[in-house]
Length: 269
View 1: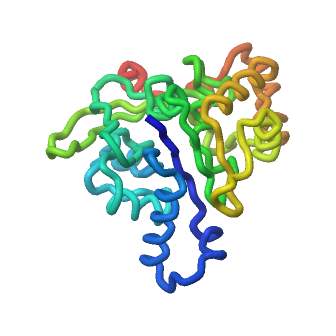
View 2: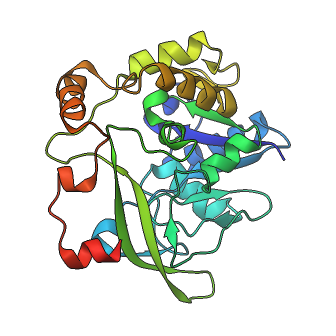
């Protein structure tokens, strides 16, 4: 199976679009262009919905995509399936790739998630009109191998998901976060330079102002860089406080370093 995951900046793409006078026509035409550009490939798009930490529920049938109007159009009009994963749901064409929701801990960015499958299947990512900062794969690259990067910490969110049949299931989502008061920023220029030098990212020959990413090479390059310097992708202003704090702690960050966790909450994790 050949898979291409598509991220897009619709505003930039449509600057060069002619003959599509309204948004629906533009979305229809661009989706047709994407399907035509990768014949025989299954197309995935992120249909992330960020309401779960607040609402503690996710309905993959109806909850809209927050990752742009193209992804929402694709979800409604072309996708054959959508994963039940809160926040990090992905929709796609072709045979369903829908792991069941579970009360066990779900780590969508880790080795059991769909991004890991993209890597295992030697998939590609198309960054249409956007740079590597839009690439959700980099969060999987941070977790590949099972360990959290030292500058992020694990946080669990419990809630429910609603499946196609309307049944509600309990789920516990875990993913790497940073302190809301002092976020860790990434140096995406450095990341792009390193990945292009390694051949993992290159200019697209299918779409203007676009890039293509080899998922396996991207993750491998990230791991190689992190083995030499675990803080390599973060920006200088973040490194200025992260590095001395890590040295003081003698370990990577954990939730208690930034958040007060109740005994009840701690027991539930």
